[in-house]
Length: 328
Image (cartoon, rainbow, N blue to C red; front, side):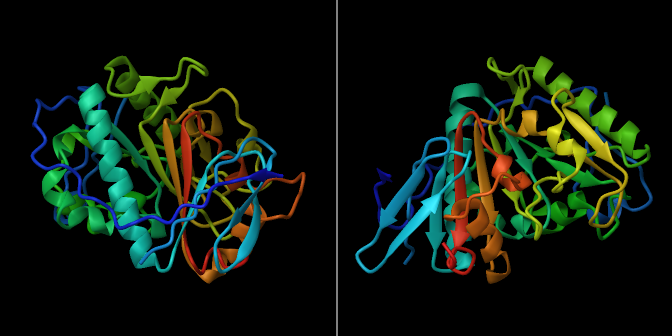
């Protein structure tokens, strides 16, 4: 077994304020959504063409052990590489996630002049709430953010199932991000058409140098993906046993028979997800403890869950509250 280091983290430091604002860059082919609930109704606008932190660094298929003064536990990260951070509460998780995201924003804005952020739906969006509070609401250079969705339900944007509407209500409406930097699907199209259209949009963002391309894979390399995990271990709209988990060529795929309603969705594929520079997997609640244990614990299975197939080019960080990590 490989002995891993246990680090006890202190409270997060603030991100430096007063980042320089630069001219906004966005795709002329991508029509963004308005950032007001009232304005999306009936319109079809779219994108076209004290906490304890336990860090576990692992290599592929390598079992790793971590210890604290009060307990000993063993974890295996299967085929993924990553770092596991456990927090006493979801509130502390959200505080750390905000710092993680803000630090990456500062890094990429300085290095590249833009910051590409991919989000999922569900409880992940709630966990981003600290970004809209001081110090981050005032220190982050929102003009350089470009926000996309790793998956979306093919429903109107004012529909309760819309990931866009969820993100708008909880996050996007509270930050001064340019509307042209928010890329949503064309919900007037079929699932297949919406997937093709979103892929066209991604290709234009790559061509415009807003999103990098991976030298290793040739797929888009987003600066960060902020992902949740479904109750069956799915990520994005890539479900256990579905053929799409094995898609190797498409950037964006569609599904018409999702096992979780609504049935029609679009989703990034694993080659795109795993080309990311950074991925945060955010999981909270005792109801997901069994899946976290299967993904990170000492169980071994040849039948991988989609969440276990997340293995980015860059860094993978699991953000867990104590309840979700209770069976590790």
